[in-house]
Length: 357
Image (tube, rainbow, N blue to C red):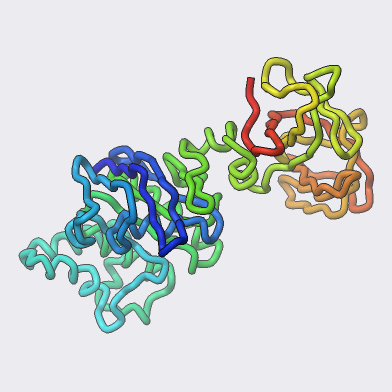
């Protein structure tokens, strides 16, 4: 187990800069998730930590040791890949023990570790099978087991659940989280799925175009997004955005491009009169209300029994999603007015940065 530090880490391919000076610290024993859209640099960053990809600038430190020049095999890390990367000609037992044999671990110790890890991951009945005889979930457990037996300082996961079906992904999320609590190791996990990030992480690093947009606890990012990108990326369904400007005569009102007007909580935001702003409202923070200030046309309704979702648009065509905690009588084609009943977020339209008092 060890602390992981990235200090101004950069990566370029010729003139193309793909990682642009990332600074972050994953404390000893934390579960950190790198999340962001495809092409944001999260897998590249993970490969640089692992030593599979050289860095162009900055430092990577594990514990108190800068590992920039250390080869991957000497960094004390274990990596679990999206493709499982199991040896097809070997049994599960051989896949688990292979790394230990390579460092001349005594056979008795190998047998003990393989037995403990296979029991922990509930694959002990599969030890004599080959990967082709396993399901996707079983293969992923073997891949994780192969990492665990090495007792690394830091675990690295590169989108390990993306090949699994939805139900199995939920199960494996729980199993990896339970494994982290049991082992207490530092873990870094890459995913494009922000639901995985929210449910598994102690800390989330949100990346875009090679830059770190925000780093913090999941609920901090959800409740206090640093900018429009983080606000739109974290949360499912995503936040609703409405453009407008702060009223020139009353800085606590926003005139929206829809023609509607909404009053802001006093003392919450640092916007100036006339400033172009974007108002952010999460689906759970809107509700139908005959006296509501926001007008929308409902185009689709999802009834899920215990909850429902309304999908529609405001008068300027801006889409809106409303989460209702129960069932609803509202139907497609209905015109509704909506009230903001929860938190509001305000962003400077030009910079995208959050506006706070």
